[in-house]
Amino acid sequence: MERLNLPFIAQRRNECKLTLQEMAEALGFRNASTYLKYEKGEYDFKANHLPVLAKKLRCNMLDLFIRMIC
Image 1 (cartoon, helix red, strand yellow):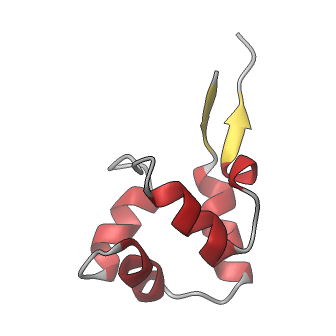
Image 2 (cartoon, one colour):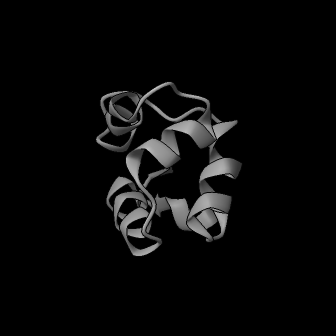
């Protein structure tokens, strides 16, 4: 089972010096506060968001996930 690694996404955004607004616009959201709710886990990223996240964060899509051992 895998789940998104939200701390990695936030850390990588900061490392890439991307603003919340830049991420929001890349994903088609109107404002930064909406994106932040996704990054904090209040909303779930959708499958179509993942390629955009990987591209903006300059990482592999697999990097966005945490592998959980059951």
